[in-house]
Image (cartoon, rainbow, N blue to C red):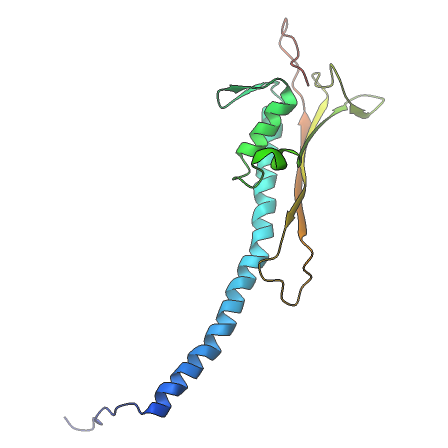
Amino acid sequence: MHGVLPARSRGRSERGAAMVEAALVFLPFMAMMMAIVDFSMPIFLRSTFSHAVREGVRFGITHQTTYNSASYASQTAAIQAVVQGNAMGFLAGASGLTLIQVKYYAASSPFGQVTGAGANAGGNIVEVAVSGFNWGWIVPIWRTNTPLAVGAISADRLEPMASGTSLPTP
């Protein structure tokens, strides 16, 4: 063939240069990958918790106490189970259960939190929140080592009970 130069073999110095170039590219590449994971995980957690508390509120407004074939002693316990079931395992176990709060508020004057029998009466507001979940940074370089608190909250009005039906324990 005309005009084609023969391939030349690489010398030792060129192989070493390739190793140095690979090292110089690999370090920033890994830093970028860790940064993407580090910044996206809290956003993912917030989205997951928002979904979980919305599902808890949707379940709570119907006054049910049975979830996934398990019966619970109170409506609050059933709502917490729904939130745990929709939190992709991040709120699993007894420690995760302590991060889920369910509160009931009066919808008429005097407005404020209500507790005890009748707190979950129709027309009242149910509020479900996840708070106190701490996410530690994967790579805390150039940032604080203090964990980031991630949470979510949702609320809705409880539906009235059907005639002749008694309220479950709140």
